[in-house]
Image 1 (cartoon, rainbow over the protein chains, first blue to last red):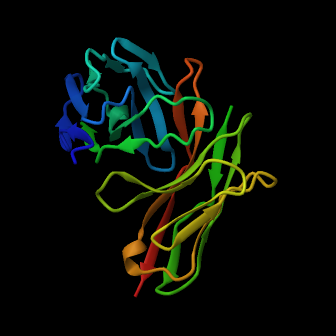
Image 2 (cartoon, rainbow over the protein chains, first blue to last red):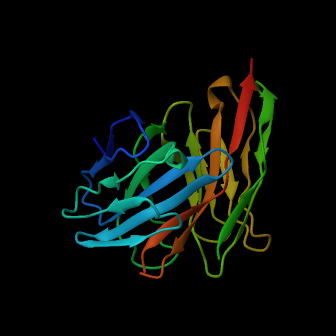
Image 3 (cartoon, rainbow over the protein chains, first blue to last red):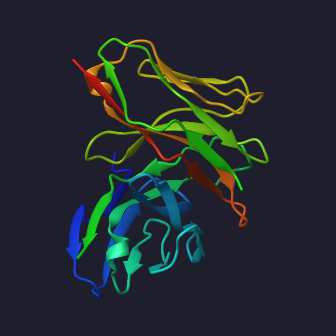
Length: 117
Length: 115
């Protein structure tokens, strides 16, 4: 059972470098999202997608780009890394809910630890 | 907007002690409520959930009851083990403007259980 797969697990970048965090799910989920986790801040939503070709911004989108060309993949791009983007990143996916309070379970990847120096 | 407030940690307990981690929420509608657990060096795993008022979620000896009257979803376990040491996140599901579901997380509570 692959579930949600994120790569790489660890990455060190220099300020100004670009990179892409990969996320793939094999559950045919329509909804995918990226969160960042920082000490004392919990998880904050960066971007999300409700299906192939559709993306939208979350709570902290600045400095990140996303695209959703297929149902399975949802990469997160850092075009010019900054030290403030040092964080742990989580990709998540779920079925599109039928309505509010549907209790739709969201599945998380194992996380990507990114350090920008 | 919707929000989740959970007790600040860290929480340190001895093995076999009783655990309570408080969680309250603010929501305009009828959210589903979740507890996620994050073990050291790992991602988040769903621990339990409840989808409507008075529902009780349970898993691995942990329980939480959806209390609409007090807007709470406190996590409890009668006898903790060293292996329960982790960070616990309370969360609620919310509907975005686009009509899709997203999670709103609390800031997390770190639990350390000593032998």
